[in-house]
Length: 277
Image (cartoon, rainbow, N blue to C red; front, top):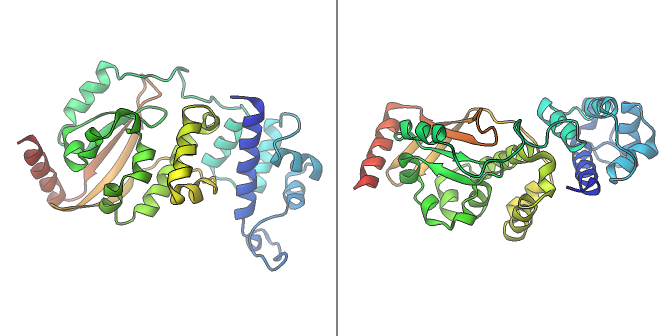
């Protein structure tokens, strides 16, 4: 990734965060009839930096900002802990990849053995680029398209924004899709401007208006357990989503859906039985 591309990404993120702030929450009056968004000079004053230098930072110009200055800007913009880490990573202060450096392309045996023990739960393994590498029988039964699509299209973000069947399964699809995109951005950090992630984002911008609108907001969040309601012909499934990173390789994650009721547990069993026949 070039230094210029990284600076542009950092500047775009700062602009998006500056424009979302509610002025009243910072004790500031509306400007031009607008109650949201700070001016650059206001952020500069709150951060203790010059207006010109901050403007250059948003424009992707100037020298490398110090960690101290970025921390001050993060505080002025009221960034969350995840957003602050993301900002620092764009400036090169955090690892661009998970510890271990190289992104694994194949799953080692311990990962596959774990999935073997999770057969009755919908679960899958993704790499650092969110390519779906492996999945359980229960996940294939719940979402058969995972095995039907071409391998190059078997990317979680791509499928969420382009597969109509997933929209039908998720009554709150818009919320789920935006949440996953914000998670993805936090995961990728400065690698977003590197292929193949830059190509993935470009293609999604072209084919999905919802992705395009959400992408421009630069939202960043961490991964936490979350409830999922899946609408399926066999019945409504109430699940909880968990995501965890492997220690080896650290570039891979496992996503597991656990049933939240005996009824859902039984419906998953029925799905698996039908799928195996």
